[in-house]
Image (cartoon, rainbow, N blue to C red; front, side, top):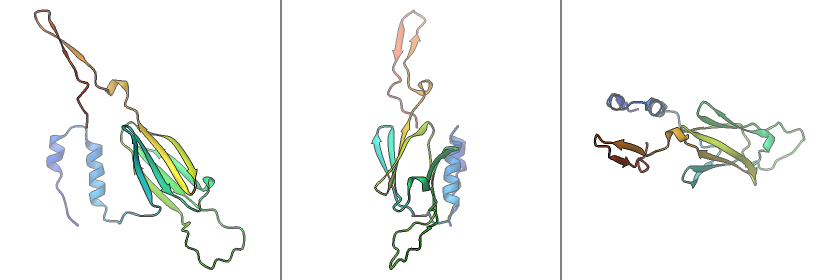
Length: 156
């Protein structure tokens, strides 16, 4: 495993400690990322996304979607079968799972739906008015006012 020294990054940034902590956790984990269940993340708007997770064999009552501490946590626990079924081949995986997605600031879950073996979770970024770009008037010593447009500045 490779070690990366991120100290120069910490000295040059202020307020990005969450990003640095996330990078540390990702680089420190040498455990292979689980691939079950498979999922897609699609961009639906400038500030909107949809996570689609393949959950064939799970019912709505066997799935939970929870947001906790900037993390979206999706879990699936199959209820034990009560009937006596005899399978000749069992290829549909119904093992328990937990899938976590780290959410950025101001991203919230707006809806979750389950249809045709797919769980769809819609997310949107809602930036508070106080954090949106605004126009600042600059007044000079002569009484003239110069307007500065900050609407095209981007925050990273």
